Image (cartoon, rainbow, N blue to C red):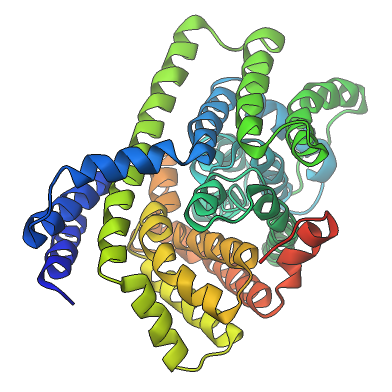
Length: 432
């Protein structure tokens, strides 16, 4: 490893330890590398400019962020919650089951785990804490676990970024997440049912039949978004990137015109929040372009591929090794760092072994979602604590059954790629 690469790693590690914004840490590390190698620091601007200009698919990221914030600012979460109460509220531990079903629906609109926890998750936690039989830790654990569905069920912001990094089809990645996402939701509902029966948790009060028509109508309009998005993408009406713009417009019309739940003041707040969130993501992307230039110049991805080849690993052994690496790193690093720094290092090795890039992408994103709920730096744990005040220790204790379930599903998807690939291949996408 050259002196420049040592400097890069040292600066990046120091920034992470000091809790410096990750985008600044990555840019500082890249600049340190260029100075140490005696190269023109102007390469930073060149790499960032070229990277952003050539990545048309990244336009989807701020638009999905905007759509999610619009829905959280309106009454969409409450409407979906009331609709789902009719379907599963009468089950044992009904409010927890409602939360999972709400997350499935909301996942088809937002593409973000954080948006899921901060929007529908907050609504269902408040409802659970009003009822006897639901502990604070259990309510938080259910919301944190179900929020991981956000980037698995399409649309998905992490999958858009992975597509930019790997060159895989966004449409195929979105389809690849459908079956794993529904399997996750079903498994979560089984876990909730087993816990609810064991603890004799209450059923939700029945919704009077006289209210059903109104609640179904209120919930039907938000449900139209995933139908419009996925129908438009796979009918060829618009591309996945254009679908993000459709999602933003659809959410704005529902919240502002149909529901009349968005004032000019709240709309301006949504715009500013979306701009801040998009700026953070863009800054991280900018840093990743510089780091990837340094790693490529040093031959790190090629060296990784040669190392894997020398170990004579099978596809399954390689994927199990990748799972182990991401599960450990996910406890300490942000999703964006894993996607933009570590995934490009592993892609040459994956291609060398003939690993399908769509399967690899869904697998990587699922690993990262598990990282969001594992201590010590599980982002969803901290977001939920900040919004509700529920101690992280209580959520971790109650969340262990969900974590075990997710790890089992991760192993199943690793061993049986067709869980991911069946739907994209059936729909005519060429994966690979």
